[in-house]
Image (cartoon, rainbow, N blue to C red):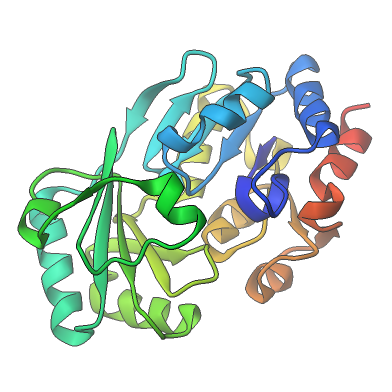
Length: 259
């Protein structure tokens, strides 16, 4: 069983309800594989790991990192190399000069001075403020590009057209914030490898999501659910819709599947 976190299994305030925590525990207790599949970096997983009793594995940074919730260690990584980062930033900046960039490394975060961190982000993200040359000087799990005004879907289309041959771009935040992973790396690719290692195929898999970064995973899984608050593209792509994240939609399904 695989589920996205923010906007899906988590409530809008970022917490896990007791009902959902119990439902996730039931998955692993039944002998099934529990995988949390998220755009979050591992450093944002501590509170989640605690609430779910350090059960299962997490696929973080949209498939770039696999994180063991039992040991709280990164066990696998698929990174964007510095030469690719440099080229992507140069091409995007030439065509969309208002973009500001940040990167998620395996063990930290850095951002340009004009990368806007507001509200919850500024407290949760932290990180070093650096210039673009330093930003792209070492491999990273995820490159982020933020535009002050554009529609997220429009910006995603622009980024994909410009650098889709170099990286895989998606978005998940509701802001004009594009998340880029190494080319070909998605939630689905990481989940498929992990499932195969455990002898699990797509037909035996259940997945939940709410945003465009979940679409590859939802397409891969034999049974996929969108929560009612999902992005229109996600709602259009799945056959099953459960209640919204704030109404414990994931838990409602899991309670039926893992009685």
